Image 1: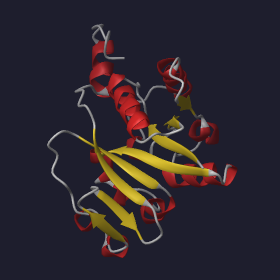
Image 2: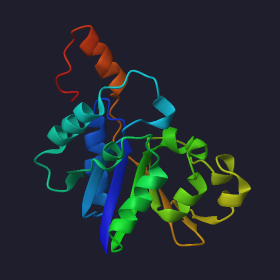
Image 3: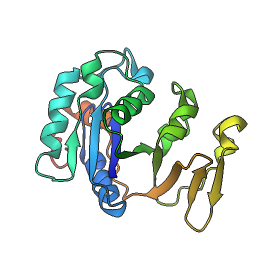
Length: 199
């Protein structure tokens, strides 16, 4: 079975923090590929300062060019509608039944996952890798999600993994912390500052 790490995001723009985290996860989890999925209209960022989808897609393609384990998917941009991760995961699984999808997500987004469309179904559709910063304390699922979904997972302290009753996993993975943000890069661009070595 093909193992794919799915790294979605606005990538507004993509930067070295995204890329370094993806490299570490690709190697440590022995993925066949990490697939970058730029969103078309992210539901939590509608109406905000977002670069055109086609430009973000092209920047992502340029950024990953030359790394054999990275691919870029236009699946969400091609739909030309609000991007929901549950729809993307289901579409990818429907197109290839011999694939194991692992959704890669930052801690900040994970603790807000309960605001996502069909988040309970998403947690049971695919594995999750939650990227943590060095020294980040462990969060209990019951502190993030309703009992209806939290109770379906058991935690292994030895492996630092949650496993659901249908076999999906939530891994907590400490990445090298690069203090780079897309917001900061956009600010530099507006003030004609240099973004060299950030992107």
